[in-house]
Length: 488
Picture 1 (cartoon, rainbow, N blue to C red):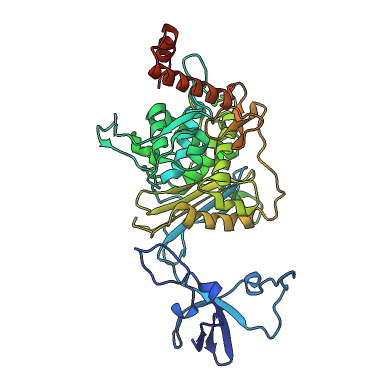
Picture 2 (cartoon, rainbow, N blue to C red):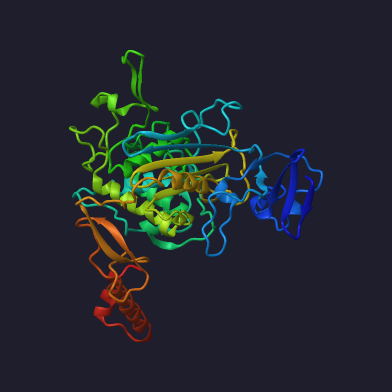
């Protein structure tokens, strides 16, 4: 380092005689001293990271970052000839990462198994089995939406109410007694499916998993293409069973593909000089299309997903779209809200393990499915606040911005079995014309709510008045009967 100017926020660095460059504060404001006990923050002076005489590694800034936009002007295509070269700090990260991306036809677009193949040949897309954390929750919600009662009615809809409350569970599979907690240590009480998944509520997911049954959840996961062992315990609701990035991304791909299982293929064709085909349509992982029907995992029993004439269909298009809509809410109003900056219709889910050792984001656009994992090869704490939203989602967004740049923009298309209703966000019931906190929610036709939020509110108020009246005077027989009928 030749000089460091805190006032200007610029440092000058020399690489060789007459070869110099500038480092700007905004390009290295992340370079704070390592402190795992403190929340991440940006430095305010360039002198906090660099001092005169330092010897370190730098990399040139991409052109679009090195030529900042002036007020009201487009950035120049090339910097002026006399403009100094701008660089930023370059260092080998301590953590590893992996990314897999393919389109909804299964053609692999990007396949990154680690930071540097020369340093490690271990493929973290296909070989690593890591806990997915909350990124496993869509599988539980999907299994719930697929369930029917003995009369063929849907047990759950996206507006169903589940309960986020502290509860001690005795796991029927292991006998262990445990009490799940939420990331923010707060409880929402009665909460809709949509909000519970968007906010990634742990206790609601465990409660739902208990209601649905671990057998159904595992069967649903197998249908999506999850092949790794899954522990039949309620802790699985929080993503404690290890899976590969390939498996989880492939599973989300079923939702994006309208209910059909995708087989990522990374080699189209290899021929010799005479045109003879040596390899063709090579699958990444299990080639479900090549499996005989009796060996292929079936869809969820009883939900009409498994079609003998189409072995690759594992869930009906309507159920797949419900999950797309719920995962869209994660981006619009939940833990993935920062991805709204992408400006594209996308859906997905964050994932963070209990000890913040693994960070995930898996999601998709109507055309591209992408999964990202960040963590240490030997699981250990990533750092305060290094959740899936903080560590993995920004990588996902940067990649998807490039992957979707040349593709025509289109939204997710609902199948004919889907209807929309404007519902009250809190109660999940139909919103009235003057309702303020409302949202348009997708439903399978015939499962949309029929009661309005105001009607329920009026009924509750009337019952409350009845209770109060009963305390101030001798209740008549009709009042007693109504109070007995009301469960509160």
